[in-house]
Length: 189
Ligand code: GLN
Image (cartoon, rainbow, N blue to C red; front, side, top):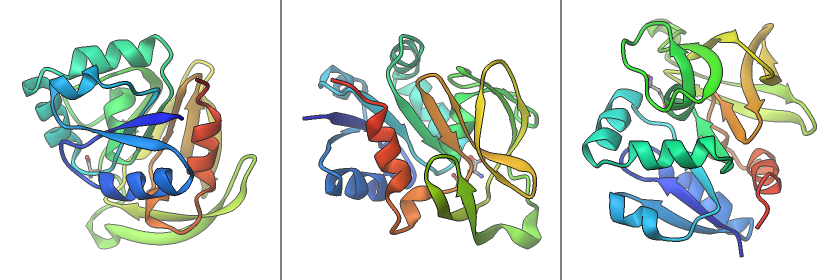
């Protein structure tokens, strides 16, 4: 059975767990370095606060090992804060976290007036999906062979680069599981 590690130091990880379990995958919460010794075939980086998650990843000494796994091809899905952790560049944050995904993001890019909003959009290979944005970043640059999977008003909101799938919205906050299903399809064990 596929086992998916879910970064569980902060943020909205429970929702990912529930969906992945319903789709038949086992999940492992990654809260501390010892948890990385468990078997897991893929990784989920949930929404939350990227600065807090990044700081905890460093303090808990989990950053290096997880980064090495991503670089060596482990499938990873990052949502919202998760895409910030993956991004090669963050235009308005002096920190860089995993830095493995060839995109630039801009944090909190929608402004206070529209902190959160819900819409629907077209997602490549799936069709119309619900999209919930919560203090979301924008993808402000797309480099290398990074493929755009979904756009909103002409701007990318979901991308894939090799084993890395990432989006600025929260697919775990909807009852449409197709994005999670597409992630499971990226995992071969
Ligand atoms: N604003 C958060 C950040 O910069 C991301 C918000 C989210 O994950 N919902 O990390």
